[in-house]
Image 1 (spheres, rainbow, N blue to C red):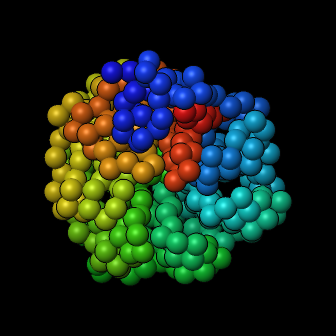
Image 2 (image 1 turned 90 degrees about the vertical axis):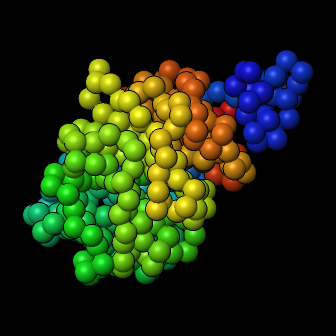
Length: 348
């Protein structure tokens, strides 16, 4: 079955008899020229018209016209920062995370579409390295760091990112030797609903998914089926369509390395994970549920995009373009971004 017909069936998108959309065009990624060659691993889709990108060289871009044009709204003096995650609430309010050891890890926020920025957090611990950020709502959010003194460190905000504090580590399980998160797509820390949050790991003996049901105070850990045992392998991205049903993707990010069992699913909130019967064929760094579907999702990576229409049990490649991250909105606004300034929107 053609991708068009599959998506039409899964999402109730009107299609003609030949499997094409009513307007005569098959669903596909349409590249949107960004005017830069930086790598965008941070992506926040607000709607079909509005999206934010965050990337290398301190770059933040914003579109409000569906990608026809992008405004460079990078914070002044941020050229040396590596932005790997962005969370946006609308066209004006956004929070970006810069990664790195010590003071390289920072959180910045804007309330005027990027015209001005304020630094809300600068990491002062040389042992901390922040990877991802997520928000439950416009006020409450978390950021996570690789293990410090044997446990993952969690930052919390209750005021939309204006201020942050480190949460107590008593409710965090011990990290495995060599275990860490991957700042590859802004999806190593994800939330669903008002209190549930999940953290993806790799590098240790096993790739795990940690879950908290109280906004990061207490956590439980579960082994995934995605292989680890090497600093380059593990779970790179998570997506939950509700507090029970989730997807995990990952593999080995090194070019040319095999990534067997690169997909997993959970139906119990991450307490247990099952291997995808037909996983993505290669390393994937981003994953997102398609809007208004209980079964359809996209996974992306440097070698292509994969589609599942059975809630992660089986995947098949539908595009060979390189993307690092993907995000979708309720109004069927699905966006992807990656290397060499690549940004695209799914056209239906």
